[in-house]
Length: 174
Image 1 (cartoon, rainbow, N blue to C red):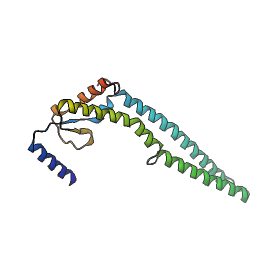
Image 2: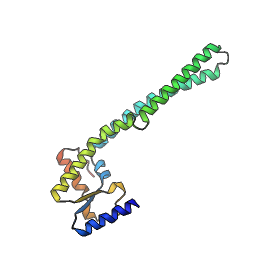
Image 3: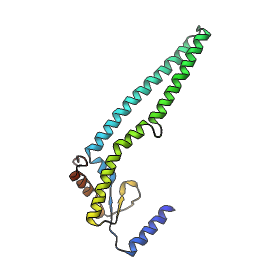
Image 4: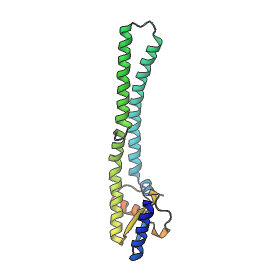
């Protein structure tokens, strides 16, 4: 309902005055730059290292559980110690997983650190093109809200060129 209302308002504004509306595909822009690939590779390497640590914590928990299950002749005091250690290791694992992979965790924050400058560069390129060419409205086709746009309205290649000339990353050939 809200989308229909926004589209109706947009249509009314466009009908009342001549507006220049263009679209670009931010996903294609992202894919065109090596700096995005570099950021993804860096993040994936960091995720692998963090996952390896989580796996080692899980292996410790599993080993203690196996030890408790196999050892029937354990003294009650030793059993309590092992059970307490098991609970401590489980909490440590849960806290690590939540702090690392959960909402607002290390991975999410690191992704934002790597992506935010790239998004800012793209937004600046779009803003510069809009000011230079008197575009009144620029829509991102990657968001799924643009159902149809004539190819002549697509400025994705211009955004990529603007980023290349501004030093926003090395464009990959497409």
